[in-house]
Length: 388
Picture (spheres, rainbow, N blue to C red):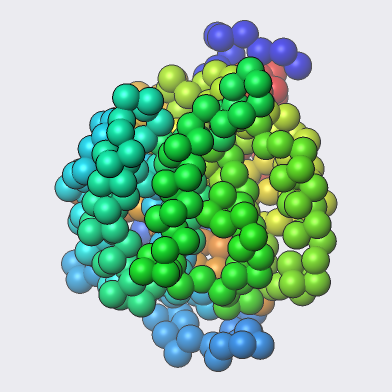
């Protein structure tokens, strides 16, 4: 149904406050929302992938010293997003440097970024200034992850390489796209991924690791073009994708709005239900996005929606929420046997946990709605149902 501005609201009061990290692990373990069997059920077996043995640390509580340590899954992914500062900046916020320094201690198999690694998308910047931003990214982030031997999967954001088109159908920020491609195709900046298809890298591509197939599409603007969608369908239908134990898609803009001042067309993907249906058709488990600068662990239909919060400048509040904005990093632990994931999310300013139950049960925006990932449609209240 059509929605007016008064309906862009979020249910369930937000109580604020964060968890105490170290001495209350059992309490917080219950706060990490997961789609996995009930505790009374026998856990699924820890399965090795055909190309890599099972991690010896599966099940162990692992985190940086002094922080809450979640049990490690068969695969662990560190998710970050929106790292940049103001236009043209060659410096990064303290939380970015802190996150990159701490990530190796979580022992992830992979780092994923939801985009906006540099602060471009300004015609006033020179080629040299854009190149300087990418050099700064490598000093602060890229080189550190390579040194730690952590593969780095990413999607380009609008500030990295916007896909916005002119009236004539050409890219408005072709220069940004050229320089982003030059940076990422330089062998010195090898992200360490096991590519399946890198023909259009870094804009859209696929890779696989530890039994998981990853599809990255170019969602740096609101419209994903028809030729790219044809590639998406072909990629997801491929044997490599369908034989994988799990499929994850990554793009900068989310399907549905979750954040203040991002709840308008152009800041979310066009035709979200059509895109969601495409991902669901090929049993994609999770779509990871950035851009809204607000963490929200959601789902819609059969698709999990991880809205990654910013760790750079400008964190935002969730829609109609009085909860203060937070700079967040999320650790995703994957159980391959049950194809389930657990999120453990940290406020990178305080290093405390974000308690998922304090987040809204439902968010309604201009192009659709999202449920918190532990809330099922059958559990919605009559008031919640009246909003969708």
